[in-house]
Length: 113
Image (cartoon, rainbow, N blue to C red; front, top):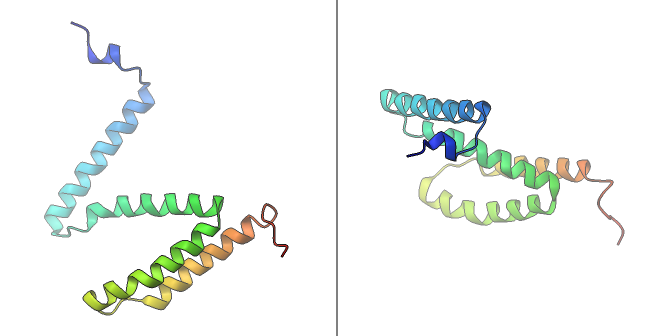
């Protein structure tokens, strides 16, 4: 019978990356249980989502406008159920990011009417 390592062609760096990811997941899980902060394991997921959003935004600035419109319509549903959410700060945050992506891509975009 063949070993699994013969079947999977991975380098030592990839094994170390997987080991680091598992260790980080274990530490976040233990920290969440001991501190009774069950939002803590969601932090890496939210960071990953934010990084993917930034990559997409700086490739295509129109995504920023779409996210801003969705944010404006969806937040009122959460505001009704949860209460005081910083509505204006979120709009300004997404607007500044969108304008930064437009400025970054200014040479690629066509601004003629």
